[in-house]
Length: 99
Image (cartoon, rainbow, N blue to C red):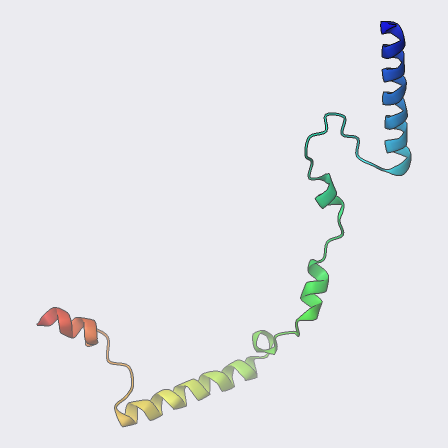
Protein backbone atom coordinates (compact mmCIF):
# COMPACT_ATOMS: atom_id res chain seq x y z
CA UNK A 1 0.00 0.00 0.00
CA UNK A 2 2.86 2.39 0.83
CA UNK A 3 4.50 1.67 -2.50
CA UNK A 4 1.27 2.50 -4.31
CA UNK A 5 1.02 5.87 -2.49
CA UNK A 6 4.65 6.70 -3.29
CA UNK A 7 4.09 5.79 -6.93
CA UNK A 8 0.96 7.94 -7.25
CA UNK A 9 2.70 10.88 -5.54
CA UNK A 10 5.63 10.62 -7.96
CA UNK A 11 3.27 10.46 -10.93
CA UNK A 12 1.30 13.48 -9.70
CA UNK A 13 4.51 15.43 -9.20
CA UNK A 14 5.74 14.52 -12.67
CA UNK A 15 2.42 15.50 -14.23
CA UNK A 16 2.36 18.84 -12.42
CA UNK A 17 5.95 19.58 -13.50
CA UNK A 18 5.12 18.73 -17.10
CA UNK A 19 1.98 20.87 -16.97
CA UNK A 20 3.98 23.82 -15.57
CA UNK A 21 6.57 23.46 -18.36
CA UNK A 22 3.93 23.20 -21.11
CA UNK A 23 1.75 26.10 -20.01
CA UNK A 24 4.56 28.32 -18.69
CA UNK A 25 3.38 28.27 -15.08
CA UNK A 26 5.63 28.64 -12.07
CA UNK A 27 5.72 25.46 -10.02
CA UNK A 28 5.24 26.08 -6.30
CA UNK A 29 5.11 22.72 -4.51
CA UNK A 30 5.56 24.23 -1.02
CA UNK A 31 2.52 26.47 -1.45
CA UNK A 32 4.28 29.53 -0.01
CA UNK A 33 3.52 33.06 -1.22
CA UNK A 34 5.57 34.04 -4.22
CA UNK A 35 5.99 37.39 -6.04
CA UNK A 36 5.87 35.59 -9.38
CA UNK A 37 2.30 36.76 -10.03
CA UNK A 38 3.34 40.39 -9.67
CA UNK A 39 6.53 39.94 -11.68
CA UNK A 40 4.56 38.32 -14.48
CA UNK A 41 2.29 41.36 -14.89
CA UNK A 42 2.93 43.81 -17.71
CA UNK A 43 4.73 46.98 -16.76
CA UNK A 44 2.50 50.05 -17.00
CA UNK A 45 4.95 52.90 -16.29
CA UNK A 46 5.24 53.77 -19.99
CA UNK A 47 1.48 54.24 -20.31
CA UNK A 48 1.35 56.44 -17.22
CA UNK A 49 4.22 58.54 -18.54
CA UNK A 50 2.46 58.97 -21.90
CA UNK A 51 -0.70 60.22 -20.21
CA UNK A 52 0.94 63.39 -18.92
CA UNK A 53 1.95 66.06 -21.45
CA UNK A 54 5.61 66.84 -22.11
CA UNK A 55 6.98 69.62 -19.88
CA UNK A 56 8.20 72.40 -22.17
CA UNK A 57 9.79 74.32 -19.30
CA UNK A 58 12.63 71.84 -18.96
CA UNK A 59 13.62 71.89 -22.64
CA UNK A 60 13.07 75.45 -23.83
CA UNK A 61 15.52 78.02 -22.40
CA UNK A 62 13.34 80.87 -23.70
CA UNK A 63 10.46 79.81 -21.46
CA UNK A 64 12.77 79.62 -18.44
CA UNK A 65 14.30 83.02 -19.27
CA UNK A 66 10.83 84.60 -19.56
CA UNK A 67 9.74 83.16 -16.22
CA UNK A 68 12.93 84.39 -14.56
CA UNK A 69 12.41 87.87 -16.07
CA UNK A 70 8.83 87.94 -14.75
CA UNK A 71 10.05 86.93 -11.31
CA UNK A 72 12.72 89.62 -11.27
CA UNK A 73 10.30 92.32 -12.46
CA UNK A 74 7.78 91.35 -9.77
CA UNK A 75 10.55 91.42 -7.15
CA UNK A 76 11.64 94.88 -8.35
CA UNK A 77 8.06 96.17 -8.11
CA UNK A 78 7.75 94.81 -4.56
CA UNK A 79 11.07 96.42 -3.57
CA UNK A 80 9.89 99.82 -4.86
CA UNK A 81 6.82 99.58 -2.63
CA UNK A 82 8.94 98.48 0.31
CA UNK A 83 7.42 95.00 0.41
CA UNK A 84 10.44 93.04 -0.86
CA UNK A 85 12.45 90.53 1.13
CA UNK A 86 14.81 92.00 3.76
CA UNK A 87 18.56 91.96 3.33
CA UNK A 88 20.41 88.96 4.70
CA UNK A 89 20.69 89.10 8.48
CA UNK A 90 18.00 91.79 8.92
CA UNK A 91 14.87 89.65 8.91
CA UNK A 92 12.34 89.08 11.67
CA UNK A 93 14.34 86.35 13.40
CA UNK A 94 17.49 88.48 13.45
CA UNK A 95 15.56 91.41 14.91
CA UNK A 96 14.10 89.13 17.62
CA UNK A 97 17.56 87.82 18.49
CA UNK A 98 19.02 91.31 18.88
CA UNK A 99 16.40 92.46 21.45
